Image 1 (cartoon, chains in turn yellow, brown):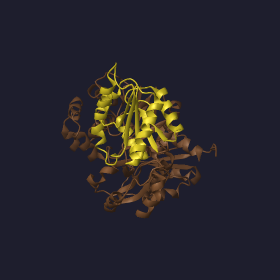
Image 2 (cartoon, rainbow over the protein chains, first blue to last red):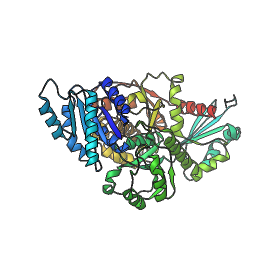
Image 3 (cartoon, rainbow over the protein chains, first blue to last red):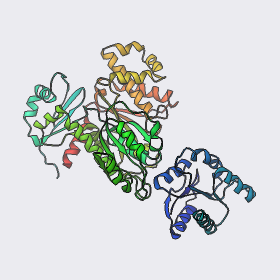
Length: 137
Length: 401
């Protein structure tokens, strides 16, 4: 299973990015890590080039809020990404907010799995569950 | 092999002039287009040529103006971007780039394309291309076809496309660029194109060495440029000639995420010259909204384009400087956007150095910075009027052979 990951926008939280990379590899995923400061278009382009099944975006400083709004519009321009699983995690807003509201908002943006302030392993377990669910259906 | 101390004869065949350099002299002659290049060379420099053995004669040429390419790739951020970078730096002119998923909506270029490049995918991904590609290529007029995409797709591509050359992927398994194989292929193709020209072939009567492209030779000189000039880094070098304008620049002037081993890149603008490409230069000028203001600044009118005079050539040279700077700035960006406010020197070489003075060039550069970049930045202008850069590159090159 191939996963494209990276930190979206003007965000240089490289340690979290590295931890995600290592954790995904430890769970047997083939990881394409775009690193920090990654534009949204690069994520989708990387999914096309690699044939990845999962796009895992991380954001630690609330940067995702702005970029998230563009997800649906941009993804619609790609002809073969309908089955791509979209996951986002980290600290997804500036300041504080109600988690339920935040998750709902990001799902509306087009994400299948939203992990706001959820620890990494829990998030990866949720991904595993989603993949198994998709497999069954 | 290290070079010996024997004197060398260096010859550069341009579209308008040829230059002949020995340790003691450097000569420049306007080409006689009614004659074969070799006959022309022999009639004007026969005595010099006869003094040298074939092993000691080194020739480069830009007379053909480079090759054209069409690139088909699967994404703008990776395969297309990497192939474009490699093609430009191999001295190839890019006619168009095609995003494969939308290939049906692209129109077919009417001109013969020298080389079509197909790229896309990492080696662990497969089946990126299908009928759409083959249908498009069936209607296209091209001379060479090269595939440098996913290794898993190579067999299918070979099966469906005749005479396709398959190279190692330009995208590695970390989505980084691998430029060597495609760059070598394109550079060799450019080389073969030069050598394949009937006129150039005859030059092997007087040299036993490979004939190189002039942009390649000039690019080689850049790391050594401080040996001949007081150039403050970072700098750009403009080689403005009769058929083409080449720009050479150091990588630190580009904001991009492509990491390669080469310190300097080059771009060749095929249709930007003051003699053979005069008409396309004029068209490019007429398309630029600032050019009329520039002509006023130079105290001439648009009628100068119709004139055949020394003054008209000077104006065209000045326009060429302005247009090429526009092409590498945020305004009218062609491929790259160089950090022009960071450069400390602009070095000029080629035919332009025989036509314009430093003052006439500085006037244009100041106009460009003021109007396009709204800045009073004033990089130092250096004129390579004795073709030292080309000599440096040619000498450097023959010492490597």
